Image (tube, rainbow, N blue to C red; front, side, top):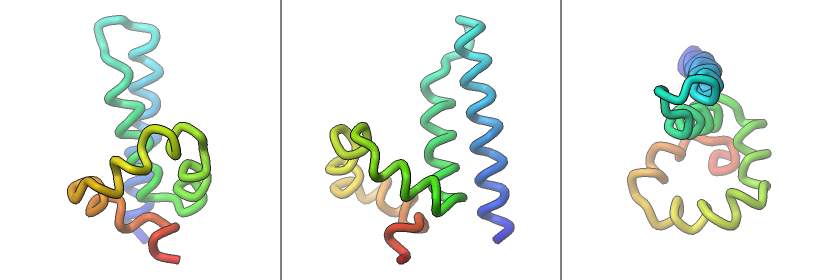
Length: 83
């Protein structure tokens, strides 16, 4: 429970850092948005379910995550795989 709350907080912080990166060209925004997505998928079952239903996930990420042992291990705590 506490780990999920910490992941959600880290996701919000990463998202905010990504937004700062959009304004300041010195800070890269893509790594922060990716980190925010991963943290939110780990921390929120609802977000994980929603994100897995998007066309972006199905088109670009679904197969890669299934074949990658590293990514599947990280995201094994996500809601859809537990339910």
